[in-house]
Every structure is written in structure tokens, then in C-alpha cells.
Image (cartoon, rainbow, N blue to C red; front, side, top):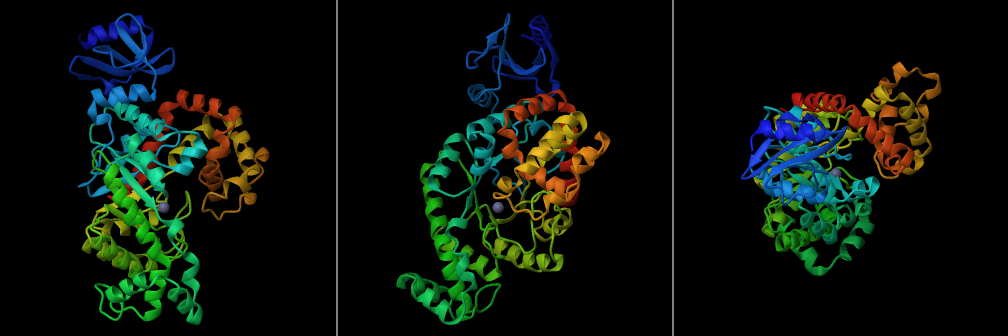
Length: 476
Ligand code: ZN
């Protein structure tokens, strides 16, 4: 079959739009993303047995299901997530709604960056009622729609247990971000004097002997000598996390059937990661034969959701330089979490890491969708923001935000024309940022919101392109 015949069959079947960039042929299969009576579908002709759909006179019209995504990934391997090892700059994008990938990919065109299009934590899955297979299927269809062939990854983000790791890998995730926060003893960081000594002495004898023989009383690379108190703190706060990380890594190796990228995340620890802590973690991993692809320390300053960096940039840069030296020495790259909108740190992060970095943004794809709503459906926006405000005590439990939502103006006093401004004002921006879970759980919201977004797809893609391009301008 040729494209002319394909298009003729499609128009007979009622399809009015073909996404031109998606057209692809593999073996005897010819496929493209199309819109039929307003609904986006995958159209397959020729060898279409693997796909489930309605046969419309020689062309099969398929819904964007997990099963069809599996067939798509098998037929067109560029739509399948893959390991990013070897790429210097990797960017975590995430897509909570499952419709953002084509817009996100526009921002990447011609740039040397490997995207992690699918990136979800278990918390995000729970709050949006999605599964890892759903998330990966959405990315695969997005990649296909855009005709993007540069490769992308899928990150099981902030996973905490072996069960979560297994679920992510079985579902096709190619990157695992292990969040060790449950094994980091934050409380021990504040101990001093006799209390510190007593807590330390309560650790198993062999563990203490291990830390003392390796790190006590000697010059360590990059950080010099640790005093006794410092060593006790590191052992108390981080030894459990290190053991957990090693254990989980070996588990991943034992079950993974394809290459995966391992990121160790300690950024959720309460305290800022000191260079000595980072070094000891790096040395312990190395001794266990593990080289992560990336490590996310807790950098100094505040990385709140959806707003600029807050803190002393000079401290951030001073620490970053040492963290980078450690990362380089031990063969991995640094990872920056909650990177959305942290424009003031991007240039220095990129310069100091020499462009070998992982940056996670998340949630901005949702905020860009909120921006479209503020312009295209003011009534829905008003109702959504009022609801978000009501539910603020619930939503703020999960996220690191400080803005007082009660400083937001009474929305009934604002004109429709002003509503898009609210998407950029810190208080309302953070409020909407953290409220995706409570909103998407509401039937009055979810259906109309997705419809609005579908009807205004082009505006959404443009917004994503603009927003992510602004990040890349400073990162590249
Ligand atoms: Zn994190």
C-alpha cells in the first residue's frame, strides 16, 4: 500500500486529520496518528494483526491502549523507552496527564538532550489513578505522533521498595530512581556530645569497625580528614541508606532483562548533603561494585515546586563544585530534582557539571495545561482554583511548598482576562501545582479538563515548547 491509498481509506473511514510527522512504515505495516470524528486514534494498514481496533474498510482504527502501545513498540522500536547511558545531558520531563510528549519533544528538536518522557513516582501514579504501563503507553504514542526517533527513557521515580522496583522494571521502566529517605536517620544529624556517642555505640560493632577503618583518622580524597563526630554522624544517618541502596541494586540486577539506569536519590533527606557524606556514600557504593548513572544530593537552598530557587546561590555553587568533583571521581553525574523553574541555578549547574547532568522537571506539564484552561475555559479554571483552595490542607501534605495560598486574591473579583496571570503568580501557581491529585479525582473536573485540552491541543503543545525551551536556554 502507498500513502495515497492509505489516505483514501482513511477519508472514507471519516478521518479528517493525519498527524503528518507520525507516518511510519515497518515491514508490511503502515501507520499514522489520526483524528476520526474528533477522536485521536492510531490508524494501521497492511500487516495489522498485532493491533486491536475497528476495521474501517482496509484500515484499522485503534485506541491508545496499553495493548496497542505494546504492538506499536514492537513494530516501531523507536517508540520504546531505552537506557540513556552514554548521553551527557538527560532531562526528566514526566507527563502526569499522558498527553504532553509531542509538545515536550518540540522543545528538544535539534538539541543534544536525551529526554526521560515517562517519569512518575508511585505517589504521582496514586494521585492520578494511573499505572506504569499507562504512563509508558502515553509516552510511546506521543513519540510516535511526533515522529521522534532520538530515543527516550522511562523513570520509575522516587521508588522506595523492592516491590516498587519490580513493578517499574516489569512495566518497562529503563531508569530507577531509588529514594532512600526512609532509611536516612535524619534525627541523628542533630545529636551532639554524649547523646551522639551513645547512639553511635548502639550501632553494630562490625559496622562501626568498617566505617572507622575506612574513613577514620585518615586523609580522604577531596574532603580531607573527618573529625570523630563527623564520622559518627555519617555512619548514623546514612549507613542504613547505603545498605538499602546496595541491596536494591543487586536486586535490580537480578531481575532486569534489559539495561537500566540507576539513580541514587538522597535529596529527600531533611539536611543538606555535606561533601563528606556524599564522598562516603560514593566510596561505599564503589566498594560494593556499584557505579550509579546519577546521584541526587540534597543541595543547599530551597527547591520548592514550580517556583524559582530560594537561598544563597554562592553556597549552592560552592557545594556543587565539590559534589561534582566527587561525582566525576566515582564515574557518575549529578542529578538536580525539582528543577522546574529554577532558572537562576541552571547556568551554573550546567557549567560546573560540564554539561554531564540529569535534571528533573515535573509538574510543569500539568501547569501548562492549567494555563491553557485559564485562557480557554475560564469557568472551569475558576471552579478548579476554588476547589484547590478548599483542599489545600490535604494537597500540601505531599509537597514542599511555602507559599501562603490564603494570600491569593478572591477569584470572583478578577476578570477572565486576568486569570492566565494567576498561573505565574507564586501563590496561585504553587496551589495549582500541588492540586492535580485532588482535581483529577473529581468527575466534574477530569472529563471536561481533558476535553478542553484535547480541543486545544495545539495551544498546549505551544505552551510546553515555550516553557521547556526556556529551561533549555540556560541548561545548554
Ligand atoms: Zn527527589
